Length: 126
Image (cartoon, one colour):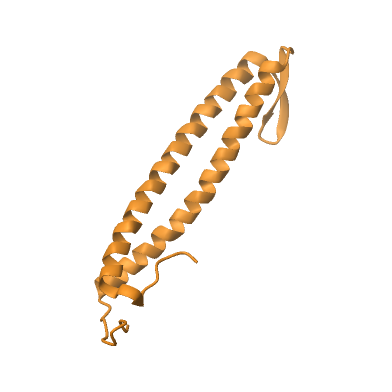
């Protein structure tokens, strides 16, 4: 690689490992963004279902189990929805934590790689 001053910077095995690790982290970061979006949508859908359940005056409601709708007592549906909300919220928190961890690792790798290669390497999104 050539630096801006014209001198060559040798890419060591360790540098290549850091570049590869950055690439893997960047891919995981984008996967996490998609997973977080899906989890937020699921959480909103569960919240909407919970609100609709509060408004209904029926004692037996239709509840989707897999691809089938079953008639289930309202109390049981409330418990299932509450459990689903808790699970989705916990999953969302874990995904957010992993995303923050990945961002921190990527920032550290950027510092290392830009420190060595200056303008010869581009680690930014377009």
